[in-house]
Length: 136
Image 1 (cartoon, rainbow, N blue to C red):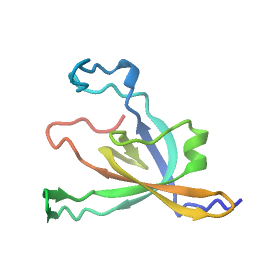
Image 2 (cartoon, rainbow, N blue to C red):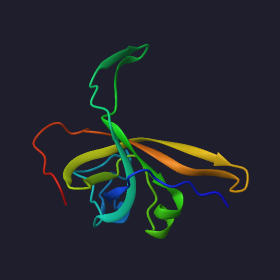
Image 3 (tube, rainbow, N blue to C red):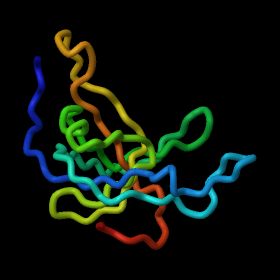
Image 4 (cartoon, one colour):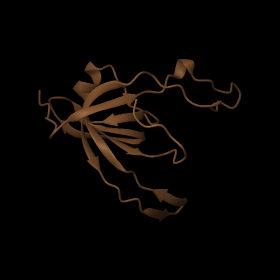
């Protein structure tokens, strides 16, 4: 089974949304207050920063780019019992405390003997640009 290696992986600390303890409006199914996040879990990842904060115009309005991405191996995510999703917080990348959130996921490295992707790119962005806390 082909499992690609990461190039210069660092420890990435991820906090997932705790759906069971987060309050939602029953009728509107909207968030009440702030989402509750789980304890940070460490998963090795390959970080790529792209701080090209350009704004592109699209048919439906302005589209903001991500600040970069972290490349994860599905085997590492599975071993740490982490299921990535939009809205997960990345609290630390290597030695850098961060406060960025996953905005998109893109499966990568499809191999025939694995019958699907072996890597996933988690694009991240600073989605709450007001006063924030960094780190864990």
